[in-house]
Image 1: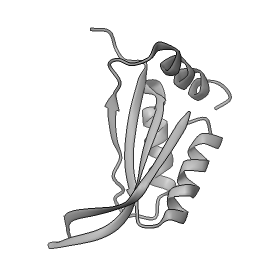
Image 2: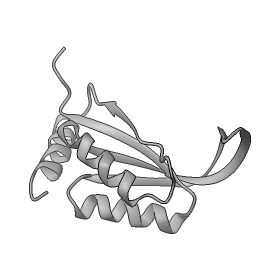
Image 3: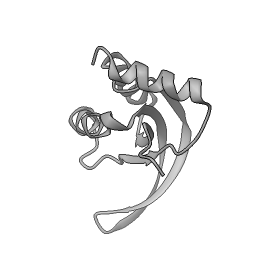
Length: 110
């Protein structure tokens, strides 16, 4: 199997305003072709020894696989969380023209 050219990155944040700020910033920086904001969602997690259930907004980010490291660094720098979720998943298939659009949008002008 060849190396995927595109990836989906997932992160969450605790406010709709921050989700929109992060999404817009990623697209403006050509780190993402598209970001879907999903929410609110409920997240259950253990943090600093306690279990919490909180309302969050999830960002589903489409990008070129070659930009994942730069996208991750940007999110870590811009995110309000001390340890933001940043999970990248390679895209191993899909609609060719859409995947080419994602790669084109995230590999030019960045």
